[in-house]
Image 1 (tube, rainbow, N blue to C red):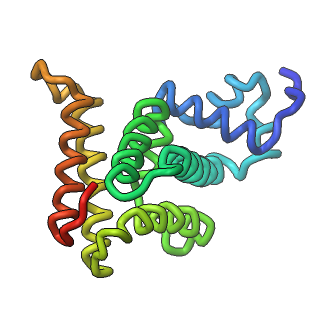
Image 2 (image 1 turned 90 degrees about the vertical axis):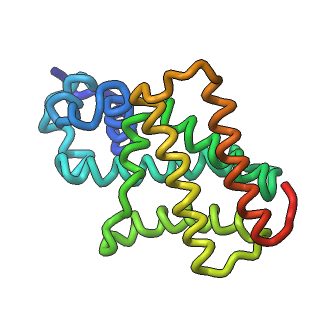
Length: 192
C-alpha cells in the first residue's frame, strides 16, 4: 500500500470516528483503521500516538463535536426551549454518531487538562441554560446530572429496543424533557 495523499492527524481521527460509529469502539484497531484508509499500519504513527493516543484524540474529537452541535441547536433559544434544543441535539448525536457518543459518557481523567477544558465548556453551556432558574450551585449540579441521566437513559432504552409500546418515542422524549423543565420552573415559579 502506498501512502495516501492528504493524510493528516485530523483525517485519521475523523476516519476513526466514522469507524467506531459504523462498527463500534470494540472494532477499533490501528490495523483496521489503516486498512480503511488504504495505508500501512506504521504510517498511522506519523499522525497519532498509537492506539492509546488515538483513543484520547477520539474522546477529544467527540466532546468537541457534541459541544458544537449543542451550541448550534441552542442558538437564539433560552430557558425551556434551550433545554429542549440541548436534549434533542444530545439525542440526535447519539443516533448519528453512536460510537463517538459513547466516548462522551465518562468523566475525563482529572490529570488530562485538554479533555478537562472541553468537558468544562460543555458543563458551562448547560450551566448557562440553567441561570434563569436561579438554582443554588449544588442544585444546578443536581439539575445537570438529572438532565444528562434522563437523556442518556432514554437513549439507552431506545437503542436497545426497550420501547415496544405503540406511542411515538419522539413525543415521549419531549414529554419527559418538558416534565424536567416544569420541575425547574416549579422550583422558582418561572415559565417556559
